[in-house]
Length: 172
Image (cartoon, rainbow, N blue to C red):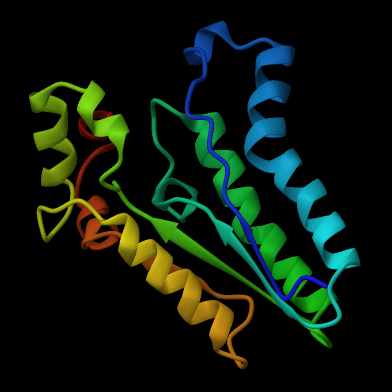
């Protein structure tokens, strides 16, 4: 039996808006949302009680849509809504929650320019990257806390507060 299931998938590669095709849209949404929905379905079949957790993104939050990655943003917003629906549907035995991290210190940041890193850091109040251990701690907290469901915990170094003051054209 499964007692905790963590969904974590991300494909941030997408064509420019003017270059979308039906296939590129479906491919992105399938990777970032469809696969997770199907994995959740299978995990739920193997759970008597427990916790299903989703990793979304700050870009899936209200006002968080990334102008350079609208498909990714939409798929991460879909995860948040899917989790809330699943939480209500399975409330008798399975809790569903989301962690929405901000810019997280991963190997991805080794591949971008120093200018882009500084721009990303400047988008948060704390001027810091989220550490992977912080995300793991939040997931563990949600898995172990029996009376939290249908919630999204944001770990973003203050990004959400600051982003509302920054025009979209400056975020990309």
